[in-house]
Image 1 (tube, rainbow, N blue to C red):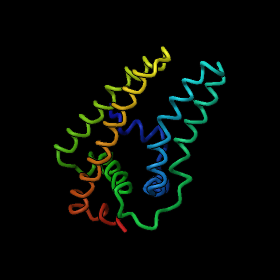
Image 2: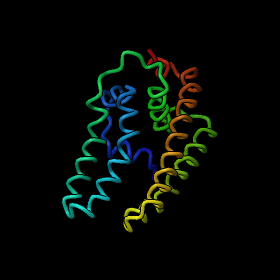
Image 3: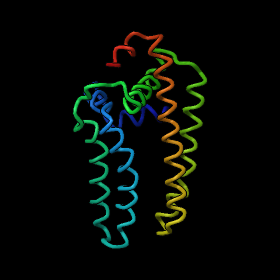
Image 4: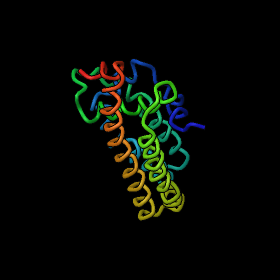
Length: 169
């Protein structure tokens, strides 16, 4: 099972959503707010009980709507835009092959993020700040490095594939 493709299907990303998601506002707001808001929503069960599920649903709606609400970027020559382009390139690797070293690193960095999930889950279940923070740090470290690697992948592939080069303006 390809987790990258499953994530894309879950988010129901079409061409218009991908284009808007390339706006730095979309990338940075999801990156900065997505996980902390989800953690806060889950943690809030200690204060608001079952209403925490409504808070979590609101966060899920924000994560889903975010790439659809951002404006179309005027310029895509930014780190954030190129990171989303790299994600698209990685997702299309079955049709347009990418260098194996990029795929291996993407898997490794996803594993770094995944390594934070048990700590995060434990911290949230036990309402313990330190495992929660440690888990979040691992998730973020893997994700940010992954995004940086996606910029590198995009830069490599736009020289090989005219469709990818056309995304840059």
